[in-house]
Image (cartoon, rainbow, N blue to C red; front, top):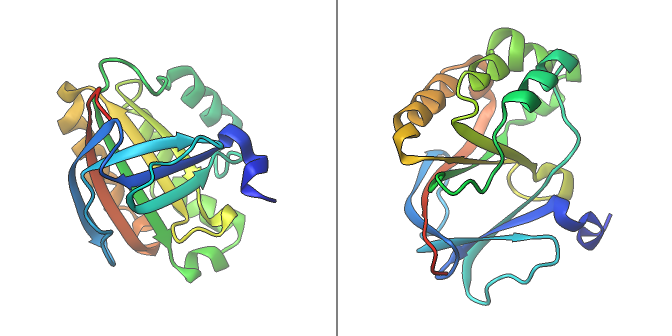
Length: 190
């Protein structure tokens, strides 16, 4: 499938000198870091990207995976939308998992993801304060399997740190071989 056919499901995070989000930090958690950038522009579909950039990470909103119907219903009910005016803080966390993860069956990955790591159960505790959207990069041949985008108001910064610490201690995270933590603040100029 060509990327143009993905429409608004395709999102590109462009690190450079322009964009609504000012970069506070870019740090490696596991593996190599990305080059530093001053700002990040978020471009949807065929929206044009800034001309100058250090890097572009692309992902697509895909089908829901590893989630059972009751969990999906709870997430849908509690999840806040992105773009709330009070949510001026954000995190972009690109993650690549190991070949061992992808060699597991769907059922084995689900077992590690939720039954052992409680990824959904932990994440739902922070809704609606912290909004998130998962973008799949593996589906379109990108270097990161997942791009997770979080938005939250400054008063929920410590709650977000707690969520990230909790998830990074799980069995699931033993399968991560590259992770970068990018923290951002929204500004009107871009």
